[in-house]
Every structure is written in C-alpha cells, then in structure tokens.
Length: 225
Image (cartoon, rainbow, N blue to C red; front, side):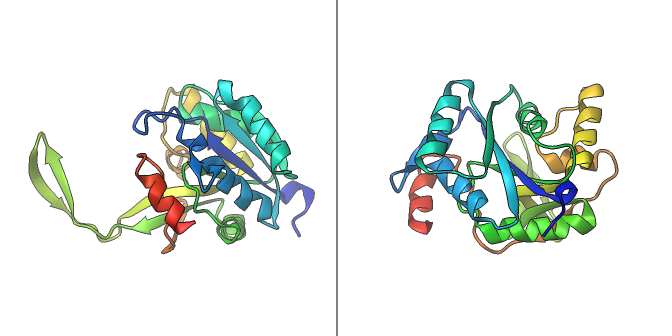
C-alpha cells in the first residue's frame, strides 16, 4: 500500500454547463441515477483510492452532497465550487487535496469508467509522473478550411485523449501555476504539463470510454451500463 505521501486521490469534474447538451448533463438520469453517480461509484470501489473531491456548479453543491449521503459515499472528501474555465475548476479541486501524492482527474461526462482503469493509471503514474487514457484514431481525418477539404491528415500515431488523467500532485500544481502566471488557457491537464516539457504516457484503451455530449448519447450509455 502507498505511504501517506504517496496516497492516491481524485478530482471528478462535474461543473460543466452543458451548452451542446442543452443542460447539466452530469445530472441527467441514466438507469434512474444521475450520470455523475457512475463516476462516483468507480472512485468509491477503487481499492487504491484514498479519497476524492467533486467539483460542481455553484447551484448543485447541495445536490452532490445529498448524493453523498444517499449513496453512502465513504471516500468523498469535499464538494467544491467550479470556476469559469475547466482549469479553474480542476484547480479548485486540487486545492482541497493534500500537498503530496497522486491524483486522477476525471470528467463526470464519462460514466463508463471502472475501478480497474483507476488502479492501472495510478500504478503507471508512479514511474512517469503523468498518464492519460486515450483511444486510437481509426477514421480518416481531414483538415477543412471553410467547407473544403484541404488535406488528409496521417492518422498513424494519433490518439484522442480522454479522462481519467493521472499526475503527481506537485507536478500538476506547478504546471497550473505557470499557466496562470503566463495567462495560458489549457483544455486538459496533459496540455498543462506538456507546455513545460513533460511528456505524458498514454494508455491506449480499447474499452469504450464514451463521453456524453448530446442527449442521444444517454441511450448508448444506458445500453452499455
């Protein structure tokens, strides 16, 4: 088991506004439970997870805390308010965690996560400092300018990056601090550490790790769950 300074923690990001979805998708019902529940369940059941934080919309903090009581969540350490941008929300979650250890950052919009994914990522991040799950690009990729295809992109070596993403807590905090100091806006945590010379390891994962973006995605999730 990891020592206190090497403990594993999590941040579940559930503060999105769901513009393309048309509402707060993290609270949409799937199999009679909020979408967020399935991420919570995976974090709770991961044996190497010591504790985690949920970052929520300001108006949903009480609702998430109520979920903690209803589902008897033992590892939920705090529910904190999200920020304007994703990196603000993640930073708020990191602020509620200890100074040292490792962290898994996960989007609540990806409900098909399982505990084994978390355990695998935490095992690898101890050697590399930064890890992300990803999937190979299998379709032909085109660059489009306006409405015209201008070239075909070589998909060899291309992956789509997903969550969870794993980091040494000190590394991710330093990367975020540098981004803020220089006014750099990043869209995921890997980008934050990449900007400062760190090359995250990618776990190419064949299991479907769907991200809910549109209402019809809920039907797919329900079938798979």
